[in-house]
Length: 119
Image (cartoon, rainbow, N blue to C red; front, side, top):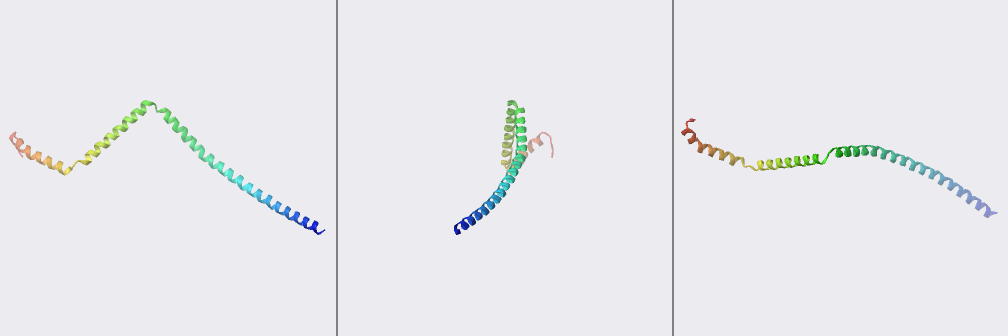
């Protein structure tokens, strides 16, 4: 008889544990469902603007034909040349340029006086 009571007690204990496991598995399942729904909502919120941006970019690229791309490339080359010219102007020594202008003025002053311009 003692063995039956022990077996019966073990079965009730096992049934109790199984009920707790079922309760915990339901909780975990609920959490997984909530997280899955949240992930799907976030993906939908990100996917819609991304799809719009992609279609907008495709439309713009389709509007550009090869000639437009060539003219844009030519414009970029012009900008590059302007940048190079600006670099060269930045390298000019302004003090030496002013000195050269003053020297030229000194040299041409007698010619100006010779041709009748008086200072």
